[in-house]
Image (cartoon, rainbow, N blue to C red; front, top):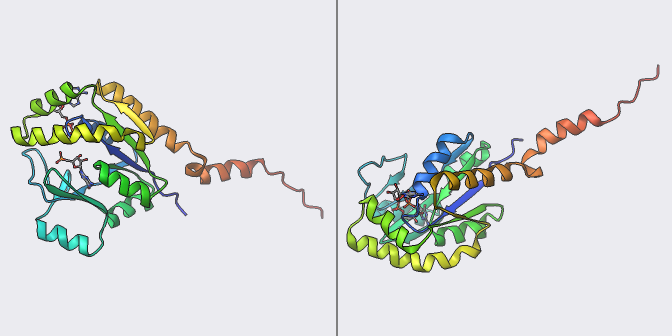
Length: 211
Ligand code: ADP
Ligand code: 5GP
């Protein structure tokens, strides 16, 4: 049987640079896929349905909650976001590592249900820099930026609940750290069982057949 892929949770205050890093990781690391979430939020101009999110209305989202289709879901900045369990399992069972870009509440739910998940918290270098990045992205109204910054003040206090912390100062250095974490997880004995079994089998002494 194929070894399931690793589940990697990436959490950060909005504006830290998570999407920027996720794009780089997907572009440069093989056998790594993104878990496309469902959301009730409206798409931003550059976003595509099925690639960045599945954009659905509140009724469809509530229906999926009732049907128990989400591994986790949470309200974030006035909209609902959720991870579809079936889509996630398809990737994992195919042996692909899956990247989940989810908020703190979602991360906590996944950590409880999937104890083998690897969790990474991305921290912006300072509050001021986070504000600059959110304003620079120019996708939010001033009210929405304020709401994200207020939430960030609470979110950063949760860093200890994660397996790793990456401080996103320079994108390239953060990318290197994330690649190292994903690479290290792939070296766990459990992830290499099949290959190891083949190697060990070459070490087993063969008994000569006595005629
Ligand atoms: P998130 O997905 O965490 O909300 P984004 O990836 O959309 O954040 O980044 C927010 C803004 O900050 C974008 O305008 C992006 O170009 C910029 N940005 C991302 N990473 C960095 C970085 N390391 N240094 C400076 N600006 C960054
Ligand atoms: P944005 O609207 O900026 O794309 O995302 C807002 C926040 O929602 C981010 O913190 C992001 O990590 C989080 N988010 C995206 N998808 C999910 C999801 O499926 N579940 C949860 N709990 N949070 C999500």
